[in-house]
Amino acid sequence: MQGRVKYMGSKPSDAPKAVAKAEIKGQGSIPYPMPEEMKTPSTAKGISTTGKKRGMGAALRGGRYTYD
Image (cartoon, rainbow, N blue to C red; front, side):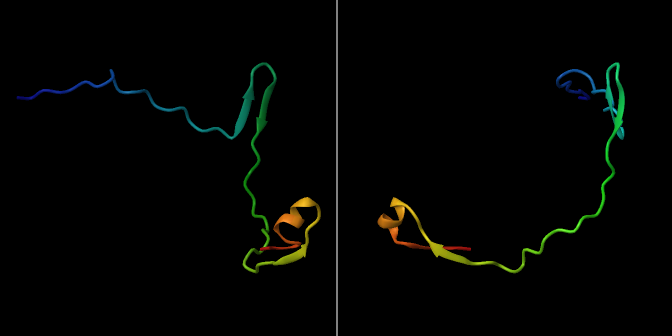
């Protein structure tokens, strides 16, 4: 037996090709920016901050906090 199963119709058409600009109807096109290398902050070194709480919550849960 040499049967084939059709599932959800025929093969879909090809996807549109990627472009490097945005086309706006009747107004032209805007080029997308090119990727560039940027410096990022170093997060390897942790910072710990302590302080004194203010307000009514401080009276209920203690007067100092530590933020990591």
